[in-house]
Amino acid sequence: MDIVQFILANASTFLFVLFRTGSIIFTAPIFGAVNVPMQVKMGLSALIALILTPLTGYVPMPETVLGMTVGLAGEAFIGAAIGLCMKFVFTGIEFAGQVANFQMGIGMASAYDPLNSVQVTVLGKLMSIFTLLMFLSVNGHLMIVMALKKSFEVIPPYGFHFSGALMENIIVFSREIFILAVKFSAPVIAILIFINVALGIMARTVPQLNMFVVGFAITIFAGFVMIALSMPVFETAVTAVFDRMWTGVFNLIRVM
Image (cartoon, rainbow, N blue to C red; front, side, top):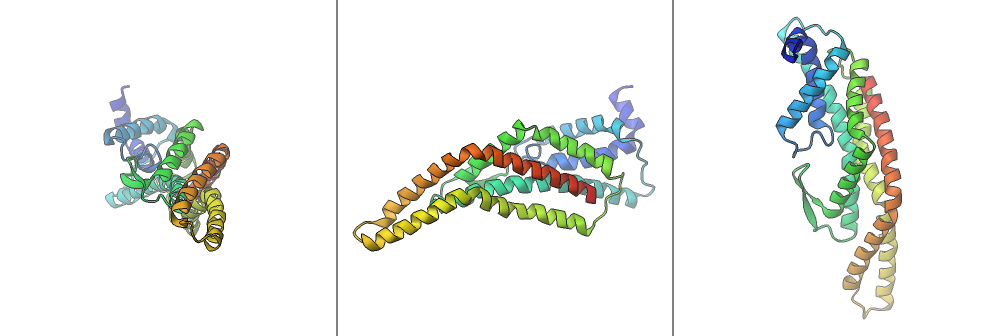
C-alpha cells in the first residue's frame, strides 16, 4: 500500500492528527520560526502526521460539518497552546537580555531578529541564540514531538474542552516571561545598582569629574564583565528552566 492509498484509507484519522500536528509545528520554537519556509513547515507537519497516524488508532469522522469544524478548531488550539507556552519561556530569556541591555545604557544598539521579524537589542539576540542552541543540544526539538505524541495519548479525538485549570496554566506560562527576565538579568542589575550608588557618591565628593561620561563607560564595562562571569552557570539555569517547561507542558496537556 503506497502513501496515497494509506491516507485515503485512514482519511479521518490522518485529518485529525494533521490539524494538531500542524498547529504545534507552526507555533513551536525553531519549527515555527518566520524564516522557516512555509513548504518546510507543511511538509514536516504532513510527515509527522503520517508517522503518528498508525499509532493513534481509528478516529471516526464527525457526522456534521459543524461538528467537524468545531472539532478541528479544538485540535488546532491544542497544538497552538502547547507551542505558544513554549515560546513564552524563550521570550522571557530574550527579554532578560533586553532588560540588561537597557540597564547598561546601550538600549539603542539593536539588531534584526529573523526568527520573529522584529528589531531586538544586541544582548537580547545573544541570549536568544544561546537559548536556541541549548534547546537543540538537549534534544528539545525531539521533546516537542514527544509532547505531541503524549497529547494523543491523554486527549481523546476531538475531546478538547476549555476549563479554568487550562486558563490558569496558560497564565502561569505567560507569567514566566517577567519572572525569567528578572532572574536572568539580576546579576547585571545588581552590579549596576552598586556602581550607580558609587558614582553618585563620587559625583558629590568630586564634582570636577564628568560622571556622565565616566559612568557611561563604567556601566557598560561592568555589565559585560558580569555577563561573562555568569556564563558558566547560564547553561545550568537554562536547562533547569527547560525541565520546568516540559513539566508545565505535560500538565497543560492533562488539563485539556
